[in-house]
Length: 110
Image (cartoon, rainbow, N blue to C red; front, side, top):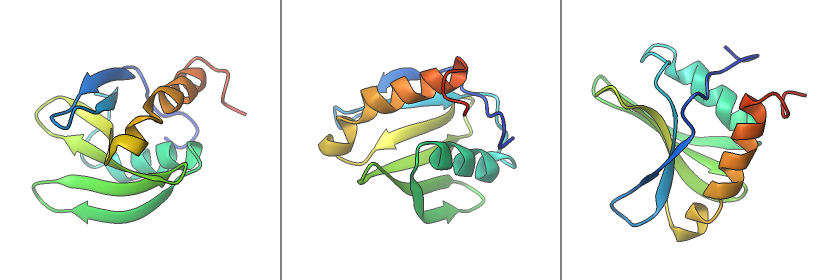
């Protein structure tokens, strides 16, 4: 999955905080989440800060472009999302989405 990871959604979604998140995919299983999350974060030049993995949740804290985000698995069929932890991180969402779109469309694979 590291060479190719699904990014078929890349939809912006409102959060209760008023910030926007990016829905990345619905194609990744619970078991494949760790490899997927690592691939996405690595592609974005980020780092995994903390991992919350239990039988009921998978929510990792990651740092991308100096700001904190959550990358999480939603097991109610909604998929995996990248969620900013504050307004500063939220301001990076359009650029992150642009980079992921370029990756999905073959421009950022090198």
